[in-house]
Length: 257
Length: 110
Picture 1 (cartoon, chains in turn purple, cyan):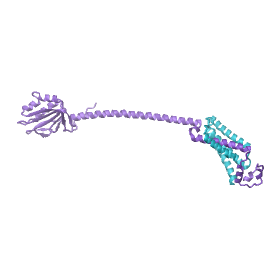
Picture 2 (cartoon, chains in turn red, blue):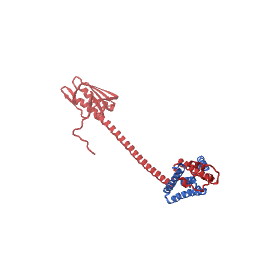
Picture 3 (cartoon, one colour):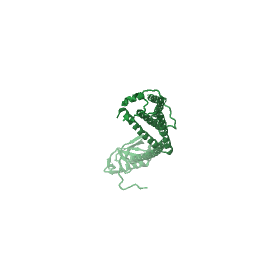
Picture 4 (cartoon, chains in turn yellow, orange):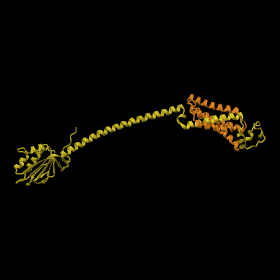
């Protein structure tokens, strides 16, 4: 094949007779430096090519963006800008949601606090929760005759009038439905018999309660009239431990609105 | 021989100097390099064929580079620069392959 291409006017005249020369030999022969003008020119062009090649390789490996064309760069910039806008919008959305959640959480917290506060107040007033605070302790005992339920109930009413907030007697919490009845020489409180001495623990303003109980013709003077014994101890800190689970109202319903 | 030495010196110089390509030339340099490679392979093949002529080599080298760069420039002006440079690279790549095949036949007889 190569032999056919060989032209008669080869410059290498000494080798001309040898036509069946091998490719490698010919290559080696061609590569032999001869210092002609043509070789110098070729060398110069090759130098230029090598230089440009190395520069371009350095350029494209050094910086990805610098090798891109203008329209590609514009497109890239557009994409980046668009993406940044999207992310900005996402950020503001998320911030809005976060603020919403925060304020909702704050409202919920306030509502929960209020509800808990009310539950505590109502729990104390209804006898559902134990309570402590300033108050009085009253020791009431039978005299020669047993005290009647009427006397004890009168004492309870006086305590309520004097602003008592939590009342306990002989370990029973007294609530709005509490009652005293006479039963064959003894007294029954809320269905259970109680006996002298009656130890009352009352939470409320101690001075007011003390004064209210001791007014002439009041609760304690009446106990003494009946022959009983009544001693009031004012205290800064009394504890009402007994609780009462309020039953579900059978007939009454909360009024809406 | 001198051609190979020149090529090596050029590569080393480019790697050592690391010059910054002017912004205007940046889109054309890769195409010009591929065109010059095509001219180099063509010249090498002509040399093996015994048809090598330094004048032809010089002219084909320079015209290849200039025409390739011009086509890309034209493409840039027309808004199809990317596609045209791809076309140029494909054509030159085919030529390089056919030249390389011819060279291979000369050297390996296969």
